[in-house]
Length: 183
Image (cartoon, rainbow, N blue to C red; front, side):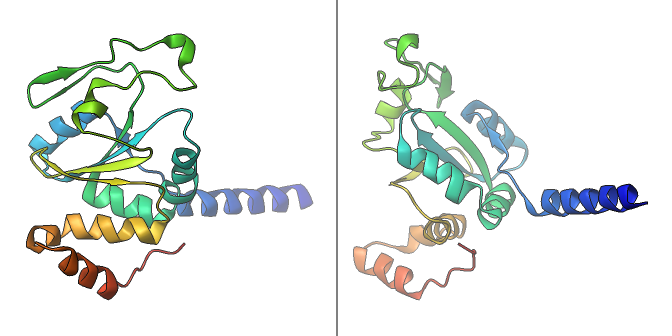
């Protein structure tokens, strides 16, 4: 009897945790661009490297946050892109690779991927936002906590960035923004 109660409690806790835990549905850029044809959504691309400490913190502390994961899954296609990896991708009819990739350096500094150069990525992590047609919106560099990322997720989702023509307008948006994501 005690064994049955223990197993029941374990099952309840496991199901409760599974219901709370939410993960981002990551896809490749090629997949996201294809998905946009059926159901237009913006794209958020996490540009990272294997050796980058802040990239790992972003994964653990921000992308694992249930509010962040739920919002991204609902409103964006999420793409992970290794800026020093050896993947091949096509963007706007152009093929991008990393011809100087060295597999011996897979977990340390490697050559930059052609696509990260194309996007002019200067730091890791960088989150790159694309519109519903796959057009480039903006990169946001650095480690962001959930509420910091929320500001940009909602800014680009609502297209408010299109109304902003000055730093002062962004500053006003920033000051007025009230985050709802839990840290």
